[in-house]
Length: 201
Image (cartoon, rainbow, N blue to C red):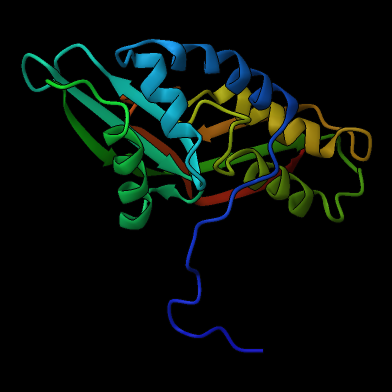
């Protein structure tokens, strides 16, 4: 089996969950407006295959009459092909005097280090691997989290949920980052270098 160069012709997407479908159905009402609103832009753009999320800045980000649309693809940053599809969608609904800029979100790698403290003498075989799997699953780009926010509590909970029921633990500490990370909403926090350390005590 071989993968030829440029074998992917269109970005894929995860199976849509019920909450995402519900949100899209409610958002469809915005498409009935005569002139485009923020919600109409958002709903039309998120209906383009390969788009995971859209942020619309409609408070004149570049001057009067301007609208910025930030696109997040299923892999984080949107490809030029995906941005082209979104531009076609916006061109079909934009107002006669709207100056619309479609651009990709920017990915920002975040290093994560976690320490799991377990009681002395407990068998820890496979614990590190299970905890790391829970961490990578939580950091996967998807609608299960707000992509430009990262809370230490949520990281610890992701690791806890991955090992609960199989391993006993006394504490889970997130050592890196040392505080919650809240970025601009045109950013996507992705997983950089990571590790889980197991301590007995």
